[in-house]
Length: 126
Image (cartoon, rainbow, N blue to C red; front, side, top):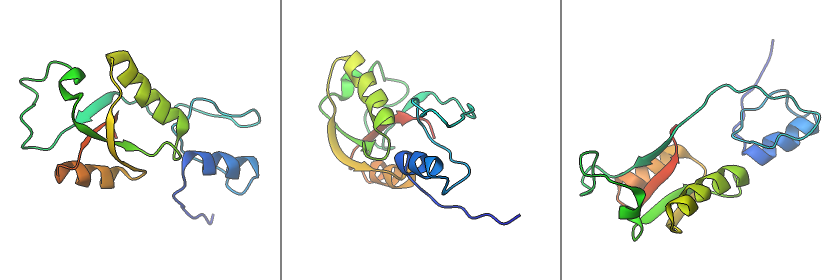
């Protein structure tokens, strides 16, 4: 059996599945189009990632409103609009719109940006 792996955004995977260019995809997507089958593989909780030196830590964290004036790093909405909307829905529920300093599609890039204190991550735990 010959196979190859290719990193693609959620929308690109859906398009490739529909056009039968790929046989399987792994997406964070709630609205799967007709004609495709899906199976839940992993359920993830939301998390907050802060730099080690940040004054807010596990022992004094009360709620996300403590960070309303801070910059956040989020996954790019073009990577997965439904995922982005879900994250923004969490902020809406909390009662503020985050200041977004950066958007990216790679979790490792986000973690490095957080580590360098360029923003915080509020996302599904990876």
